[in-house]
Amino acid sequence: MTSQMTQEKTMSIKEAIETRHSIRQYSQDPIPKEHIEEILELVRLSPSAWNLQPWRIHVITDYSLKEKLQDAAYGQKQVTSAPVVFVVTSDMEDVISNLADTVHPGLPDEKKEQEVANLAQFFNGLSIEERGQWGLTQTNIALGIMLVSIQGLGYSSVPMLGFDQKKVKELLNLPDHVHFAAMVPVGKPESEGYPHHRHPLEKIVKYH
Image 1: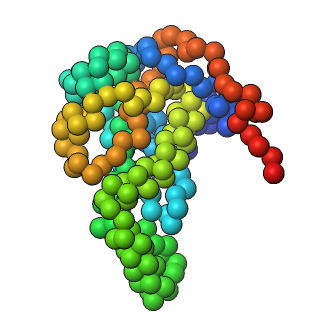
Image 2: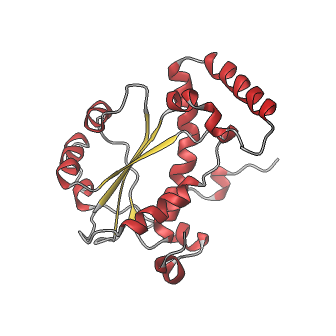
């Protein structure tokens, strides 16, 4: 998908990473649906082990639902300030129920069947919670790509985990086994984020 926004406003990956800050106050200007879909198309291309793609994204634009999500997020005002909220979840039980959908269509049928059997054997050896945690590690890859994509396409965001997960599951009618990567308010910023405060490379990198 190539939109006018992409042609005119896209930042380089370097620019998007360097300029991204967590924003907590947004303009109420709506985000066009084609811009939302462009962000989601980029997220859809995220890599995952065995190509299992466990992320599931809920796009919230209804204000009354955002008010309820804000209440579940202990009153954090960015939830209703932003015109769009992405709730990024991981659902490994859905993945396991549809393993054939993740196998590359170019493989021979026999190879596809073997791949599905191997994956089923592996994941059936794990508990639901273990499977859920495994899927969450993969979904966090997609979350990172989402944050950079949002910034690169001219919007701002803030990833949140400060919310009552049980309440959010009830609001979105999600099963108990689902894991949350983040709630992500998105929009045009009306405030500046704090300057970056990050560890130096010497703290986080070891050469071997």
